[in-house]
Image (cartoon, rainbow over all chains, first blue to last red; front, side, top):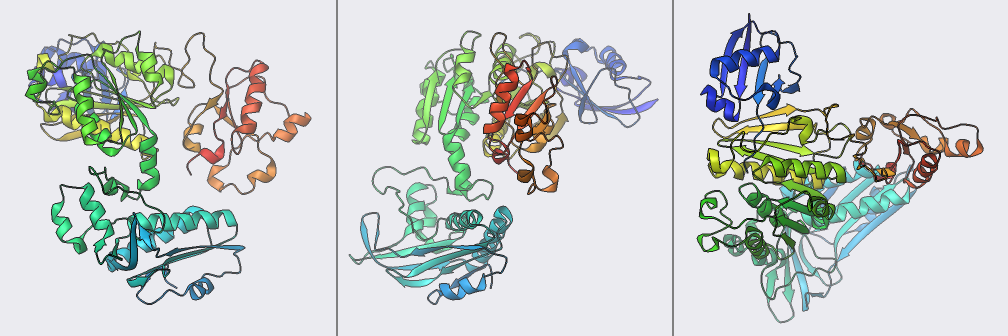
Length: 80
Length: 527
């Protein structure tokens, strides 16, 4: 189990009801983690539409996760 | 001798001159500013200089140190008079000794220019008609009508202003106030040179809504020379809470036209061009072409990707932003090989309607205002060259927690948009012969191999950090002693970009497609 700090933006924040949470997870990659959280929070957005950043750097979905990582899920935003 | 000081007694140039002599110096340049008998059509009898000395000396010493470091001169100093001066008296003296004359002249010019606008010195002119006035204070009060308290306490100005008026100075007293950029010129990174860069710039703002309003206001106020506004919408009452440039009386009028009206009232130096239309695939290239930089301020993905594709094609920098309820994102695009475009970040271009815009999701006015102000800041940084070392990133801003996050972004090699960075090519158009870089580091990061074609003797004075490993002197290429490789991707470099351009043209003719010339050569790079 890894302890991961998660930040949500925009529509994900609305769905999750919070901008930030810390989870204990067995998810091995950023993709696994998103699927796990999408199921829990009922995120409607497919992963392909989002970007993920691990420790303040944009990452591939296949990026392995380590304990203490900070993972940010970012949907595209259009308002202006 | 101190690098900068004040004297209430007449200046003694011979003594200062002797103090900066140096056996290593091959030359000496000096500037003297004298009190002249007229200013703006009025006959001047005598002058008084007053300085905020403790502050002024520090700033003056800093300027001299900057000049020595910047131009590599041997010694430099500046002395300024205070007190009462008669016509013809020496008001300021600058002297520089240096190994070579070019640096001496440049350093001398730098010192007097910087002293004039950074050191807090005030000048009181006494006219033949018995009148008198604090010149810089009046100038300030005339321009900054919102600072009337300063007018009545001219001696307490906390800011640096132009000093004694040695050159002709032409601010108008008649008519409306002039725009006054002194507060931004006072920044050492801006200065008059920076202000001139802003005045020479042309910026296109796409969208004059929640983001566009602060962008337009701050760019116009900062003195950007030419601003284009693209917006095909009319003002609606529901816009006003986040677009307070407009008022109730404007509802129903075209945004671009009303914005232009307001900005002209803000700054008459500005040239404003309105494009009362939506950005479309048919007009975007023609619009982008006429500007140096594009600010994307629309509220829909269609327009955002349209602008991104257009700036990639045109090799122009752009600043993007979007907001959603209490959050926003800012992204700067620069036409450099390793910089991501919007499609690099969002390979699956989202469709409008999938995530909400302001109309659907709601927004508080200060959210786009903050993000728009950040966009304006990004534009000024780009135009002033203050962002040279910045890595490409998406910056997220959360206005509920006031948290910002800078997420490092890279170019996506699989970006389906043809986005090779060097250079962005449009099918059917030839690749540019020249590429522009600000620093050698940026050029090295371009993915092109740098080839220095200068002669060996020209490389001898290069600082150690600026050596280009691959060296093929032009003379050896011309004589056939060395040959240029027949494949690879190269950036040809010489001193001023003339020889490298001709070599590049020749290599292209020989079928080497991915070879470019560094525009302006090493001389055009910032150190």
